[in-house]
Image (cartoon, rainbow over all chains, first blue to last red; front, side, top):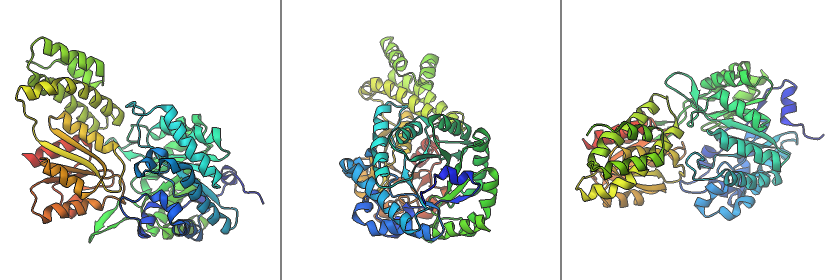
Length: 298
Length: 207
């Protein structure tokens, strides 16, 4: 059976479950500060693949890939600028292998993070950003990505260029999620001042197939953000990758405050607000994903 | 000398060329460079900073204001040192080891510079040796930035290092996952929730 598009699966009314954190997971496996997380896809493939496998085993319908910092702008710092295609393809392939082993109906939504460069200061041009995203997403598609998950975005221009790079150069679905913070006025904005309404509208216009929000400060606030996005985008699937709250230092160990049970308890609220795909960000583990999966199937 | 409203507004609106021209005109007219800085330019950065804290403006507005400020500073800085005007203090800033994010760090650097301090930007992915080098070059305050929950723990290593050797350097921390609670836990000298408040933190530890 050919694999369905994610948007079609959502249309059937099913709530899908995505994966949890990669960065904090890699750290548990021994990633040191100063090491390039993406290079593990080449140097320690078994460890990277094990993350994807752990999330599928927990019940995820889709997993990301170890490619959040996979643009040339980020890899440059590690002297890996010339290996963008190789690293991204290898990482997507690991997630794709895990998906195939998990039954062949699972998806790979390969991660693309911000470049860290800002158009507003003229330190980078639109063409340079587009080319960087294009190189990365073409490699991810070659590695077997079904969709590209452009995430942690704060600038609509940069996000739109990434969406355009996906739509013009691959046949992957384009997912794009923004990170919002609560302002003193109680509404939500990205670091660049973009509201959830503005983000949703701009991404629909850019041609995104799925929109949403990620990271943030706990799953409860995601409900408010989803409600706003749902209003301006009544028909577009919405994905939420919530973190497990902000980390607290407990006896010298960084711990995330939200337990699997706490996050699972918010799943129904998120679905009621309009979310179609739910997963985790920083600090979430396979146990969080398992609990959320149980909450949607219960 | 009273505040030059035109210059003040040009910085607030991020009009780089106007700022350079207005500063040049003041100098040509014989104004004291220290007064231009203290009475028109620094107040403009303070105002944009407090609007940022109130969520009336966001990062793009701050960035372009800081860029305009820099255009003015480029003209007056050489004259300032000639006139014997001393910076308020020497500060070093860098994103911690393993973390490549520089937007927040750059914003803080710009705001602290805009408040009249000399700022050494030591970049991203800074290990203890890099902070040490900055302290040896005279930094009285080091500011550590982290965006990732995975790199934040390195702040503790830096603080522990300097405290263990009895260094007098003040250590301030900031970044998305960082909290006051965390600063207290690791023994940092201060924390700021945004680039504007970072200026207040520097003032506080150097007071």
